[in-house]
Image 1 (spheres, one colour):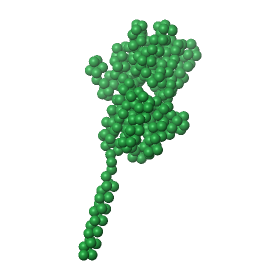
Image 2 (tube, one colour):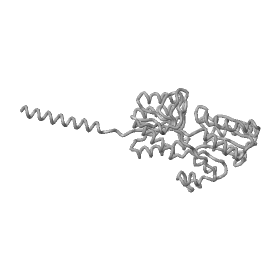
Image 3 (cartoon, rainbow, N blue to C red):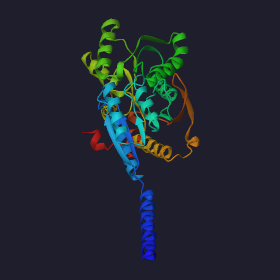
Image 4 (cartoon, rainbow, N blue to C red):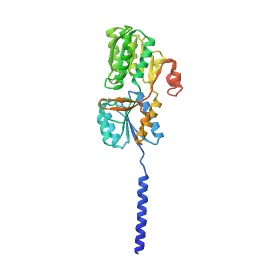
Length: 338
């Protein structure tokens, strides 16, 4: 009987050991959350689609939520993601100055954070993934100065609380400064546009034309939604196509405007390249891989220097739509001619 009990105990211990080992070997699927500002910005939706596509390819479960153009909602959605057990947050912040509490909460739970395209200020986090605003400013100015080396310029920068808007304007100001000093260029109006908003940009240009008249040669608009608003106003005054107009993001309506000579150029951030690279970087961070080789800059966010991955952008004009957008599969001619 004693032998039987001893044998039974050994069998029970073996079974328990097997079950424990089996449980230890079972790993839950990685979850990564992507928070974007709102549906107002098609680029963040497109890039988000590529982020989720690549995450799924890598065996990761993506969770995606819009900020619905509301700071508080974006923070609430981030907390919901944390409560769902995400292993990392990728945040395209609606307002980089107000979302720090979410970042601190994520870090308190051991969840790493990537600031995507828009810098998050005054809090420590893991990586900033973005374009190069100095390069984008150079693209804007190269096109403008080539088409209109002299004349009246208007600068509509992005949101003053978004580092991208501030850096882009700083780059433009630096490049244009010697041309202004020589008297070749007269900057008749410059302003930041809250939330890169289309309607605000349209109203601003309306006020500029009401104050200064129609003698405008160049308008540098920080985003394609803003450029679209500008075009609406230019249409009212019969100025469409007569002004060199720059935008950013290569939204489909902006490309159509370029093909129809309403907009001169846009700056394209290759959506698939950005989305895939961001997803791969996020997975590397979750898996605690060394990402030093991918870091090519640092960005001071008001508190600390954030390791930064900068990705190059491409200028889109009427002449290279085929090469840069059609051949890579971003758009089709059917879409652009619709």
